[in-house]
Length: 349
Image (cartoon, rainbow, N blue to C red):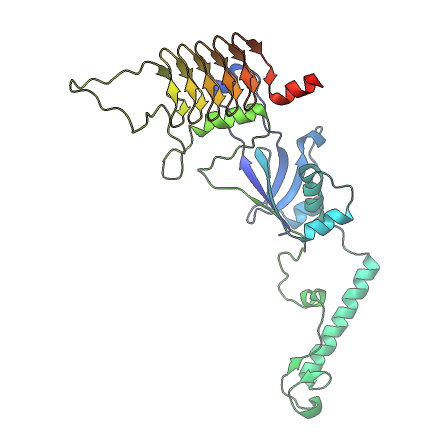
C-alpha cells in the first residue's frame, strides 16, 4: 500500500457534554472494501450537497463496499516513499487530509493509457509470449537447455523476458487486483480509546474521558479519586473511616503529591501531579496541569490551567485558559479569557 490511514469510530457524547453545544468531528464519507479495508471512496461531507455519487465502474469492480459516515480521521498516516515523489510532481497538494488523501484514493482508479497505445503494447506482449512459448515447445529460438544450439526437443528455460501485462493476458485465472496504487485503512479493535485533540474543547473532553477508559483486561488507564502518598490511610482502632477535610468527586483524576486545603470542593476535573490547592476552593470541569498553585477561596469552572501557573486568592475564572508560568492576580474576575505571557508581550508592543 502507498498509504495507510488510521480511522476510529466517533466517540459518543456523554451526559456532561449536553450542557451546551459541543463540537463534533467533521467526518467524511469513506467507502471500504469489505474483505481488505481498502479505501475505495473518500469524500468530505462538505463537498456533498444532497446526493453522494459513486461511479458504476467502481461498484462493478468492487461490488462489496461498505460506506461509513461515522469514522473519524485521526490524522495518523503511513506513506510509502513514492508519495513524496507524487507531492513534488503535483504542486497544488498543500493539505494531507483535504487534498493528498483524496488524490491518492482517486489515483487508484486512474484511467489506463490511451486505447491505441494500450492495444499496441498488449499485442506486442502477446506476440512475445507466443513466440517464446513456441520456442519452448519446438526447441528453437532463445531457449537454454534441450540440446546444443537449442535444437533439442526437451523443455528449457525461456531467456526472453515478457511484460507483466502479457503474463496477465495468458493467465487462465484473472488476478483480483494489479493496481500499483492501493490505499488501506486501519480500524483498531475494541477496546480502544482514540480521540483527536486539535481544539481546546477536545482537550478538555479527552482529559475527562480518559478516566472512564480501561484496557482489554478491564484495568483502568488512570486511577480515579484521591490517593494520598503511601496509599489510603488506615482506619483507626475504632474501625471508622477517617473523613477527608475536603470533597473530591468520584469522577475526578488526581495526580500524585497533590495538596488540598480544608473545605475545598473538586468535581469532574483532572488535577496534575504536585499541585497545591488552598482552602475553600471550588473547582468544576477543569484541567490543572502539573505544579499548579491555587490559593484560598478560588473558584474555577470549565478552565484549563497550564503547568507552573499561579492563581492568587479570591479569584474567579469561568471558561478561561491560563498559560504556563502565568500568575493571576488576586481578586481577578474573568470569563472566556486567555491569560499568557505571549498576550502580555503583544500588549506591550
